[in-house]
Image 1 (tube, rainbow, N blue to C red):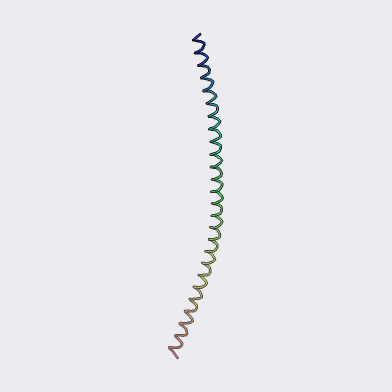
Image 2 (spheres, rainbow, N blue to C red):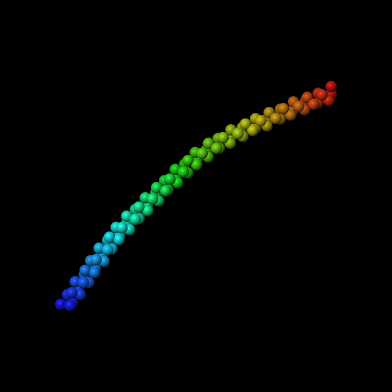
Length: 95
């Protein structure tokens, strides 16, 4: 009789332990899925940020190229102006 009660209690303990295991396993799976979704969302946001930075960088590179071209023109103009000034100073010294 006592042996039967012991076996029933042991079997009941195993059943409760198994059901608890299944419940916790499903809960862990849901938590992992939620965390994975959060990570994916953050990675997508980072990817979009990088794309935006690339676009801004290309615009800045074009602006720098345009400014470099303008500086070159200004330097050439300054050289021509200095040559004209030198010619005028030379003419004034002779005359």
